[in-house]
Length: 456
Image (cartoon, rainbow, N blue to C red; front, side, top):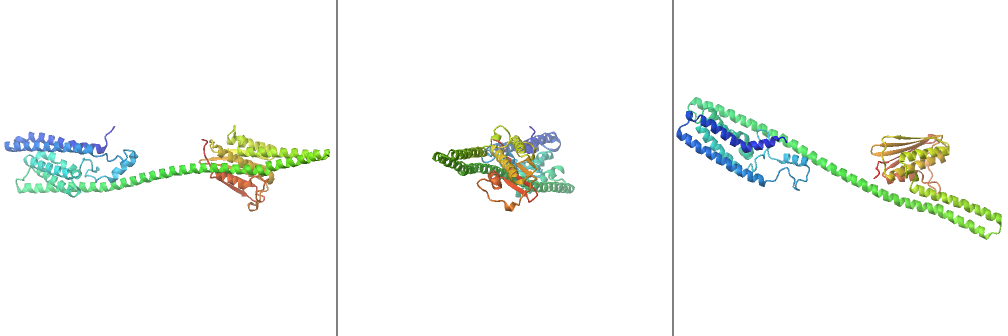
């Protein structure tokens, strides 16, 4: 896998001083005979060993601190948080940015007292080495890269200026300058190095502020998205709970409906049958007995029809083997054949499987709407449309009958079915609704919509 920029900077801060010290030593050794005497060579060798020892000691401390420090991108719960949120949180809360534009915190344990001491000692050794041999400025230039990483913010600029002194001295031919012209050259080179260091440091700081703002924005967006997902999950759970409660309420309502229908139809029919049979047993008149027996038979047939209607209203037989569109198509065809009214059924949208309760509710609404059209509208044509519309399903039943005034709808009666109020109650159990459009001489249109709950 490709190495990230941050990982490359970490490797540079760890191995860069070693490589630059080795390169500077090779270059200085090659030119030692021309610019150094034996005493300076011996002193330089001791300083190189000291610099190497300092670097090895710092590396050992970095490994210890790096092993002890937790991963800044890991969450407190052991990494269970979203990786994107962890990354943007780390970017938003991390330290400042160096002159190179990279995020600080790339050196374990820095900035701090230990890193301050390390930078001061390394800068002093580099200055001393460059004093004896200008080629050691190659080693000293590392201070331009890691001063912001190693030093607290209030000391970072001073560290850059100290590095600029070493670099200007080496570039001007060594310290101290041998003449007045040499001092002018040193001053100009120092100014150039210092300005470059300060300018790049300032640009890096501004870039750091922008990066922090972007990271904070990303973090807030990630948290907002997390809260939105949580709200959506809670909403889905609430909707499921509401549907469950609606189903339970529907069952209770259906029980009450069935009890009322038994009381109003079957119980009264049975009572009437008993009364007719009592008359038959009490009269010697054969003609009168036959009349009452016929009345009892009529009541029995009527009660049987009511019983069948109640059972069908509780569990639609039409949906036992057919989907809702197929059941509606057959219902409309049978209704048209029985009534002689021209009727057409249409399906729009992509057909999807529906929950049994949704299908039963829409079928019952369609049956009641067609029954109302047959009894009251005087229509010559009717149309039924089932529409799948993304997150809801809609049923429209319309006719070209005489229509009526919606404000003058009579109250429900014992023999009048459940009517418009019943349709609305059925739809509302599934968090749906029924709308009515009609007027005298304008026909009637009933539209029922319910959430599209899949069969499961």
